[in-house]
Image 1 (cartoon, rainbow, N blue to C red):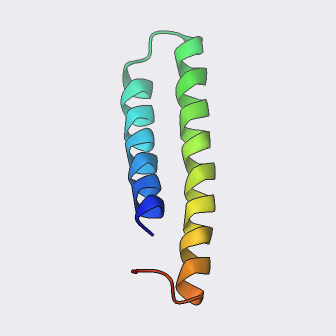
Image 2 (image 1 turned 90 degrees about the vertical axis):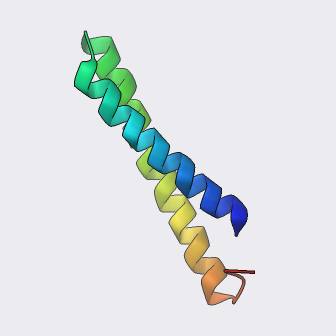
Image 3 (image 1 turned 180 degrees about the vertical axis):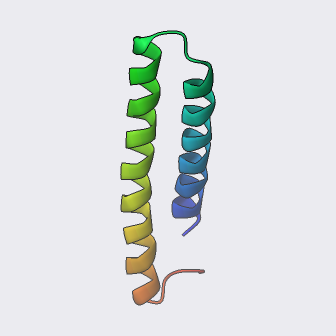
Length: 63
């Protein structure tokens, strides 16, 4: 459970960084970098939330 919580915290940081970087990017390459970062964060978030739900259904969440 703690690892999944930490993963979701990392996802939040990744999304914040992508937003910050995108706001100050200087060229297309930076835009691609932050788009990949954002896309990866959403993919990781989806997987982590699915695991959290699976653990919750098994009664493991919160232990």
